[in-house]
Structure formats: C-alpha cells, structure tokens
Length: 558
View 1 (cartoon, rainbow, N blue to C red):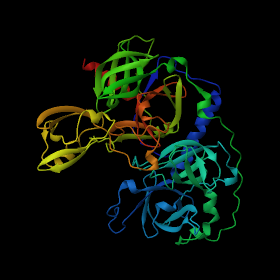
View 2 (view 1 turned 60 degrees about the horizontal axis):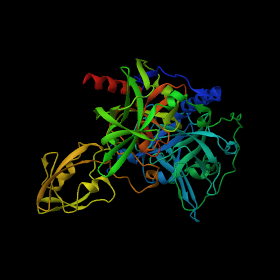
View 3 (view 1 turned 120 degrees about the vertical axis):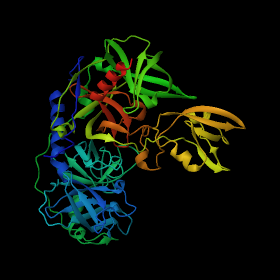
View 4 (view 1 turned 90 degrees about the vertical axis):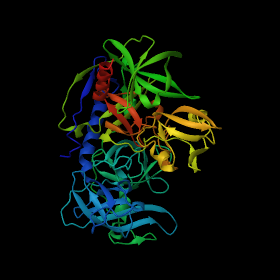
C-alpha cells in the first residue's frame, strides 16, 4: 500500500447546515470519484521522480538543485522508464526515486527530440541499471482514446518538491493534434515533464511534454509513439533524424469505460451553501484589493474568514451591490487568516463543530472531488491532488517592488513601478535609511532586511526625500514571476503562495483573487478554505481543522 504521509491526522469539521449535496446524477458522480481514486491507486506506484546524480560522491552534481528534477513512468519489468526528451542529457547519470522511497541509478538510452525537419517528438527513455524485476505501468491502445475521456496527470511539479506526486484530473480535448500530441485539460508545469497521463483504469496513455499559456493547453506524447520507436529508443543514441519505426502491434483491447458527465455538470450545492461566500474590498494606497471570504458562525455570531495578506486598510464587504464596513478581530501570520466582524446581519454562516477523525489511510482522500463556492452561485470543481503538509516559504518571501542602487554609502531608489500601491509611497531618489528600525548602510543590509517577511506584511521605511525625513508604510509583494508560459495563468500566483504549516493541494483553477472562498466535498461537507494560488497546476487549501483552531485562538485572545 502506498503511504501518502499517513502520519497526518486530518480533522474534518462537519457542517451543521445542509450537509448534503443535491445532484442530478448522484450515483454517477460517486462512481466517477471511485474510478478516480482507483486510477490513482493503480498508477501512482509507477510514477517516479528523476534527477541528475553523481554516483561517485553519491549526491546531486554541483549546480543541480532539487527543482531541476523531472518525472517519468516505469513501463517494463527490466526498468525502462519513459520520459520527455527535453528533460534528459545523453551523457548524464540519473537517480530514480519511487513513491515508496526506493532509489535506483539509471542511464539514458534513446532520445528522439526533433527530426531533420524540426518536427518535435520529445521521446526519451532511461533504464535502471540494478537487476531487479519491477512492477510496471500497463499501456493503453491509442485507438481507444475518445474526446472528453477522463484522464489523470501524475507527476512531480518542481513548485512542491514533495516525496509523493501531485495528481490532476482532466479530460482529453484532442486525441491527436496536428503535431501528433494528445491535448488535455490535466494541467502541467515545470517538473511534470516526463510524467504520465493515465486513464481511470490506471493505463498509461501519454507522457507529459509541453504546455501553452492557457491552462487547458497541455500536451502529451502518445504512448503509441514510444511503442512505434521502441527498438530505436532502446539504443543509447541521440537521434538527429527520425529512425526506422517498428511495426506497431495492437495491445489486447480493453472493455470500454462508461462515459461520465463532467464533474461540474452533475453538482449542485444547496442554496444555503451558495451563501457561504462574500467579496471583501480593502485599500492599499491608491489601489483597491479584492479577495473572497467565508461566512462562519461561532458562538452564535457570524464572522468572515479570509486571506490576511490580501486584506489591507479599511476592509469592507460587497454584498448585493451594497458596501458594509468590517472590524478586524484577529490576524494569524502562520495560516495567513484574518477574522472580520461585519456591520450587518446575515441569515447564517457555516456552523462548525469538531469531529476528530484520525485517518490511518490518508491516501484514500487523494482524488476526492471538491467544490469551491464563489459569489453569484458560481462554482469551480477539482480534486484533492496531495497532502503538502508543511510548505516552507520560497516565493512568498517579502519583496519591495522598486529598483535601487548603492551610492556614497546610501541605498537610493532609482525606479518605482507605475500604477501600483508602492508608487504612492516611494519616489525616485528616495534614500532608504531604515527598514523596520534596522539601519541600511550597504547593499546586503537592504537585501537581508526583507528575508524574514512574507508577502502581504506591512513594513515601515524611514527615508530621506529631498533632504527631509519621512516615514512610510507599505505592503510587501511576493517574488516576481518568470517570463514563462507556466506563469501566465489567469490571475497569477498569490503574493503569499507558500510558508504554511499544514495545507492540502487541489487542482481547481482558483484565481488569486478568489482565495478565501470555502471548499466542500461532493456531499456538502466543509473541507476548508482556498488560501493561495500556488502555481499553474495547484491551489492550496487550509484544512477545516486549521479554521477551527484559528477561531478558537482568536477568541481566547479577546
């Protein structure tokens, strides 16, 4: 049995209001969820993480980081692993890590990247050198693929660096593009290259290759292409032109899987749960921030829970076209939660009580269908992709969005971006004297001043402007994103996108401004709150148990 962090205790907080979901096809959605879970259980053991390795020093080579790893799928008892050609180097040795913790050494075999006409094939094979008999992924016939077929992406995105792969759910939108790829809505990002696209029976359909900017544009190499060039790919050659293909032998046909409607089309949350979300506005300089909030009922009063780093000055609620002021009751830095008391009465919030449920078999929750409720009865669906547990800060280390130079023992601002909150706080030629009371006299002082701050933290800057002393306060941003298709998704990454002690990972396309919204399972049970858009493929969910603890701690302090 695969161990997905089984040491985690996942406490579910049950709804006292409307604990069921009315659905047009409740049996079909339950069966779909069962098939998703079954497909994950079957295919995960064959999904491996691969990284360059120095076998002499028994460590990663100099200049290689964990984020440089990629994914693969083991397909033979002898240890053949399919991956993407662009991920491998023909002169490199690799370490292969299985989800159960086993580690092996692998060498590259054949690589077919582009042919003489620059057509992209992106096929690569590496092989484990240790002599063992390996369990391997069953392959599907390409001819059995159909449009809208449910599929699973199982691979190791570099934005997480976890010992277990992330799972994403999607559907096939093109069984064969003009370039010969499969296109699906099962999202990918860097690190996923070489990972597997599986059907719900756990059969390998394709190998992750590339993406385009839209989240629905994910392209896989059909597994039939590897089978067609299997003889050539078993030779350690970096092909510069397309080799002679094998005669493709059809695999044994499999029973057709019953068609399923989309998750979204069969789910209809009860109207009371539709009212569990609100829109929160606040001021950051000349800018207005917008974020969602979740209504909760605690001690017979209604409150709003939201994402603290996205709630600045003068918070207020936008409800039915009207604005209502809010009072900040509590903020918590570790969870990035804020508790607000609105100046209005609503019918009811999510009533919570704790029901501790220790799950010794936590992997069973991977693949469960989740529904995020948004304003105007809008919903977004997805599945639980992983248990991230503790996710240390990386992209969320505070960032002051200005350019500066070191001049005559001073840090002087050289450029301030237009149309941002910071543009109303700092000006060109401002001399930064102190950050949070710490004197800034050299470049490293300025760099180190923000390393202990998260995006969304309010910092005080003492400056000299045209010879006059000033003190300004500004909110820090998250680290800037690279110019790459994987960062071009709608809404972008949340400024505070990591640095959490206990989070779930979901694959719904929640935009950064939609965080703070509630998450339910298919039965209507409250699972938690969307706390951050982490990457192209993933949203982080703060579990319901964390929400309860935050509420309890907030009122212990008052």
